Amino acid sequence: MTNYQELENKIQELQAEVERLKQEEKVEQIDLSTCIAGQLVQLGNGDFEYYEYKDEADFCIVGGDYYEQDGRCHEYSQQSAYDIVKVFPAEIPVPDSFDASGAKEVLKGRISFLFASFPFKNTPQGEQYWRDIFTGKTKLSFGDMILIQKWIIQSL
Image (cartoon, rainbow, N blue to C red):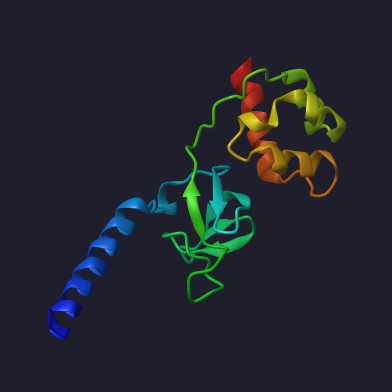
């Protein structure tokens, strides 16, 4: 086999590998123009935030930061860990075993009721997110309060 043929075979193998990886990694196309206030999104670094509103300059405000409609964080010119990688449905189902009375206490500021309000693992945010709020490592955000309020209303 000549060097040319070897290189040609290697190029074909690499092209096949690229195609395989593209299929494996189908990235969700982000479109913040369809979001509503309080809609949950996930950032590239794993954090969760909530869509707030679109400002006069057509920037989408998410967690207090400016975003392009395609989910790119406006602060960074290149791809960053703060880009939005997932937009959850506008209506997140009420978690199994949801306790509306405990959740109401949480909204009154009694975070100690959070643990008994719903199983953390049954939410898109996952167990660690809510556990950090419960233990005081992070605070309950305005978006979290809206989500819990929606669950209370849905559970009535």
